[in-house]
Each structure stands twice: as structure tokens, then as C-alpha cells.
Length: 441
Ligand SMILES: *[C@@H]1O[C@H](CO)[C@@H](O)[C@H](O)[C@H]1NC(C)=O
Ligand SMILES: *[C@@H]1O[C@H](CO)[C@@H](O)[C@H](O)[C@H]1NC(C)=O
Ligand SMILES: *[C@@H]1O[C@H](CO)[C@@H](O)[C@H](O)[C@H]1NC(C)=O
Ligand SMILES: *[C@@H]1O[C@H](CO)[C@@H](O)[C@H](O)[C@H]1NC(C)=O
Ligand SMILES: *[C@@H]1O[C@H](CO)[C@@H](O)[C@H](O)[C@H]1NC(C)=O
Image (cartoon, rainbow, N blue to C red):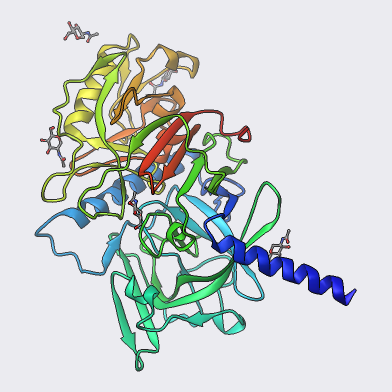
């Protein structure tokens, strides 16, 4: 018996080692914050509460992104990440430490660091799960100053004779996390096999001073950064690819698959991830035009390009819900959809949206199609009606795309039922409309 235990232990260690090479391949689950399966589910929120929260969230997330890019506006140099999403976002569960304790983080393609609240708390916001206690974990280790992980931080300070490397990540809504850059064992479950992926020595921020601005019910203990910078989940695992397929928001009881590594599905329409002068925080894409019912809007060519001062551009984001478009283009879009649609336009009493119809879900098919034209030959993404129109909570269907004076964002509402793939080495994002509730063939 003792022999066989030893044998399986060795296998487990081996799997851990293999998983650190670039052959890692697992399927995780993204759970929407409005899902009853989400640890953050608030059963008291009404549908209209959720829509209001999602609009507020998209707008404030955007205002950060805008702020961070604006020259002349003094943002503290540690404000470097998008705001912490509040109303509508996706979380991923994992285990941390030895023995393993369960936690989860917001999956964010627009930031890098993995962090979570840690004891001892100088300041922590409320969370339902017990706060991670590094003193109870035998695999916990502080990263020291001078180690490459510490050097990779945008903003670090060294304390106590270089024994402690502190990080500070600030969000535009004044949320922040500050603590010690650390290293731990993390376990992610593969939702196909039910098996565990054990990842050793993952760098993360152990947050002892954490502030969250708009505390609404429950809060995510932390974040999981999925951009391409060196401390992100992807980069630490040397992954070139990931893909996700977001199930429709009305299928709230289902989780959405996210694939890392070889099983990532980079299929369908392919458009380059733009290189905008070393700006690796976000995945910038080239949105070259928009059509309504096969007619291209007369949008000036540079509307969605990043300007010399860093303002503007178009990014794809997992942390914002509604797509936000340059207000000039947005106004043209509204006008043209209204023009090409025979249904009468109705004012939105909630004042959240600009174009609404009082129609049945079937009648949405009468509304003109919207197509996004991305860089590449024939990279024309027709938005489904489900991805374009949202119930405003007041019986109307409204265009789920908001205007902005800053840079434009493709949000998760417009990514429902599309397999979205990211290949960071080949520098492409792919789109393939499909039924995300059906497992990938
Ligand atoms: C995965 O790891 C967690 C935490 O150690 C454990 O509770 C769970 O049983 C493991 N699952 C499998 C299939 O080994
Ligand atoms: C929005 O589009 C207009 C018209 O193309 C352009 O002049 C303006 O610079 C764009 N705004 C931003 C922030 O990119
Ligand atoms: C749509 O636009 C065309 C051309 O500008 C105009 O002639 C027509 O009256 C408009 N139709 C509606 C329903 O607004
Ligand atoms: C939508 O139409 C229905 C029936 O035609 C009507 O009862 C309802 O008041 C309308 N709602 C709005 C917000 O206009
Ligand atoms: C991601 O990082 C790698 C390694 O630094 C780099 O070669 C690649 O171009 C980056 N890709 C993107 C999309 O930033």
C-alpha cells in the first residue's frame, strides 16, 4: 500500500512539472457574476438592478481606461490597471496553498497581476470565503527584491533589506490592492477530466491593504490577469494561446468554457492584435468599419486607431460588459439602424440607452443587422440579435452599445455565443460564432 501511495505521489509531482512547460492544456470555467452558480450571486438583485449595474460598470471601466491614457491628467503612477469590475464580470475558481484552500478571481484580459486578499489584513474588504492565510500554507514564499518576478512589476518597493518586494495596483475607481509579491502553489481544475492542474511557484500579489470603492453585496477576493505582460497568468505558464466561449447571459445556470494551451480553439475569422508601441496592457484590434444592413457607415478611417498621444483605439475586454464606441461612430450607427428599421423608435425611460424598440424577441429579426469589419480579408463579424439588443428592464429592447469620447471597447455582451481565441505569439484574435452551451467538438 505504501508503495502505491508513493507511486501516485510521484505521478502528481510529474504532472506538476509537465504543467509548467508549454504543453499545459486545460479547460477552466468562467462563471458570470449574475449566475446563481457564481460565488457573488445576489439573489435580491432584480433584472433591472443588474442592467443598471452593468451600464454603470461599462462606463466607469471605460473612464479609467480613458483617464489612464490622457496626457496632462495627473494620475498617480501606481494607477495602472483597469477599474475593478463590479456589476458584471466573469470569475474563475482555483485553489491556493498547501493545504489547498478554495478561492476565485475576476478573469481580466486588460491587466496582468494575479492577486488576492491575504491575512494579516491592514485593510480588507468583505468577502464570503475565508481570507487566505499564508502563515497556514507550507508552500507560501515571499518573492525577494532582485528576483525577476519583482523586477517585472511596474511599480515595486523594497523593504527590510530587500527581503520584501511590495506591489501596489491601483484602479481608477480608487479601488486598490497593496501587499507582498509572493509565490504559491495554485490548483486549477480541468472541467473535462475533473483532474487537477497543480501549478508550482506562481507569482501573485498577497494583498494586505485592499480597498474596493463600490461595495455591492459580495466581492471577488481578487483578480486573474490575462494580458500578455510577464506576471500574467498566461505569461507565467508560457502559454501562447487561450480561448473562451461565453454562454448566453440568459443561460445563467451554465458556466462558460475557457481553454488554455493546446486545446485553445483559434478558429474562424482572424484579425491581428495590433502593436501600438509597446502598449501590452490591452489587446488592441483594428476595427476598420461598421455596416448596417450591408451598407457601410461613412466613419472616417482613423476613428478607431490609436492616436499619437495614446488616446483612442479599440480593445477587446473580458471585464467590461457593453461595447463602447467612439461617439461619432455611435451616433452614425444609431441613425442608420433607426433609418433601416421599420419598427417605431421608443424613448428609454431608464435613460440608460439611446435606441430602443417596444417589440417581441421575434420581432428583433426585423431590425437591421450590424456588422463589424476588422482588419483582414473578409473579417466581417455579424452581430447576432442576442448580442446587439438588451432588455432594458422596462419591457423594451435597446441597443447594447454605448457611446464614448475615449477609446472603444468590445465588451462581453457582444461576445456571447462566439468562440474568441487569442494567440499572443502569432498575435491574432479569432472569432467563430457558435453555440457556447455545446461542448467543443
Ligand atoms: C483537486 O484539488 C482540490 C484541492 O486540493 C481537492 O479538494 C480536490 O478533491 C482535487 N480534485 C481531484 C479530482 O483530485
Ligand atoms: C472619434 O472619431 C472622430 C471621427 O473619426 C475622431 O475625430 C476622434 O479623434 C475619435 N476620438 C477618439 C478618442 O479616438
Ligand atoms: C432614411 O434615410 C434616407 C436617406 O437619407 C431618407 O430618404 C429616408 O427618409 C430615411 N428613412 C427613415 C425611415 O428615416
Ligand atoms: C409596449 O407595448 C405594449 C403593448 O403594445 C404596451 O402595453 C406597453 O406599455 C409598451 N411599453 C412601453 C415602455 O412603451
Ligand atoms: C506577447 O509576449 C511575447 C513575449 O514577450 C511577444 O513575443 C509577443 O509579441 C506578445 N504578444 C502580444 C499580443 O503582445
